[in-house]
Image (cartoon, rainbow, N blue to C red; front, side, top):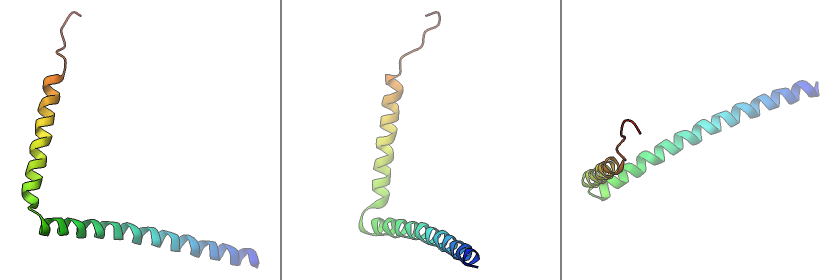
Length: 74
């Protein structure tokens, strides 16, 4: 009898842990959305994104120019 009761409690605990994990993940997503909207409203968000993209493209271009040229026969 105690064994069955213990199994039942373990099952309930497992279910509660799973629900808690799902709720935490959902909260993380909501906090991220909230922070993004907060950034958008406080700063010039689009200009910041454009600047970041320009920097990324410049870094990509630098990487491309730094790659050694492969020569055939060596």
